[in-house]
Image 1 (cartoon, rainbow, N blue to C red):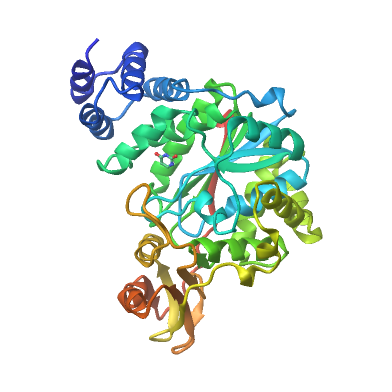
Image 2: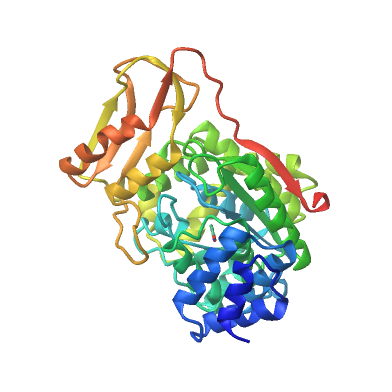
Length: 438
Ligand code: URA
């Protein structure tokens, strides 16, 4: 087999065999196929698509490019969640401890932010001392002992995806339904959870902008999970405006702590309760998602979710005095509240523009390995549908310098669109896809 023939076949819209896909994935992972051929192939896939069978073959080939964990020998059932990426999405920080507090083991391997979307590891690393580089043995030990782990993906899990994702990021080939589905599911299959809740984001700040595309992606991932012998459910959730109010690593950790302690923004809290409810139901910890949601609500009300988060931070070397007193977490030197330039109903708070601005402030990276500033970011004060009076605080900017603040002020104002007529608030969810339906 030759890599070039496989590229040509995809370019000419033909269906690749399982052997061809395996050859290509293994060749790329082992360094026998160079980046330029993999880039050409990824672009051909982006333009010409893949059948569900090809996507499943690709997922399994990437999952088997490294170690596959079997968590069933460690805990009776391990649940996991995965978001396809968004702005202000700190859901994992709340949901995983809450689900663990309700009795199900959660073993999560998260990623870093890239481009405008944030990453759980960067957020957790705002907490001094918190380790996100556990070895596989440490991951398994902690899961067995505490029933909750939140770490980075080890190098041995789906290495082909790690390499392919970095390549896609710089070749304009991220936004492909089969490539996203196989990237997400290869990692989930390799990480070993038996029940997976997929949070598929859609809208202005998501990879999928329409409900049709988000549904296609969700159905594909749920059916791949089924073929791989895992339970899965996918939620289609809004990412037109940021989730909650805080965007930026430390700011999001503070908002997650408020939520774990029973407060937090109503939209974010509700989002977390729904996701946790589905995780509990799918993992067999609750009869259905409604009773799962009620259990999660109790865990927030009674503080068991917060205690579970605190134990997680301690177990992974984090200094809990910072989360006990979140005002001690790093703060930006320049913090300024920006007033509303007019009165009106908020019609749009463009999630991607807000996310991109947080990157300009230093909260995210332009390319892998760039250093980030955990303290900077934006705190919104309103949601779409709110009436805002001219001069009232619209958002605050946490910046490294006054120059940075001046650089982003107008862009952030432009990310807010106004209406004189009342505007409906945005829904949190657009649908749920269960395994039986695909
Ligand atoms: N998240 C992933 O893990 N992979 C993608 O391709 C997109 C989002």
